[in-house]
Length: 156
Image (cartoon, rainbow, N blue to C red; front, top):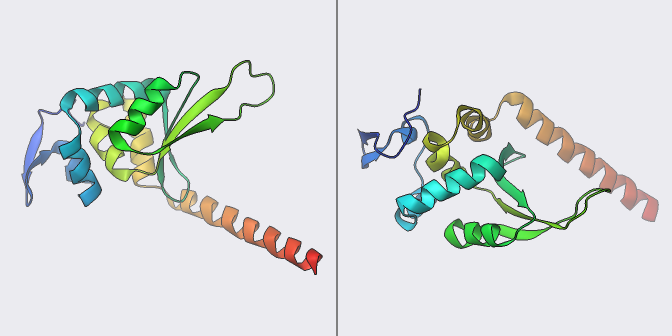
């Protein structure tokens, strides 16, 4: 079981690092985030994404949050980067939604010990996708390329 909080550390070749890093790799983006974010910011991000976030693998690790209110999404963008835009809800939606998205393995690694078991499982699936997930992404790409070739042939 992964301990909760930032107090659990281990000693690695790069010095004292959070326990969650033991199961993943360290990179410059992660190191930048560690230096950039205060403990308070990290806990706020973890809490917000616990309620509003989703963690996906769609060819790359992607974290996404969708919400009606824009200010929390802008705060996420200010803290860690990413893209904020307008989500186009399906039929029957009463309000315009906004989204924040970031392709970020490093943030997932930092949040791993702070999230609930359900979210931890999603983060681990995002960080270490199965062969089936890779196969789904490859199949979508093949189908897309086939559709483009069909359109090009029709145009002459």
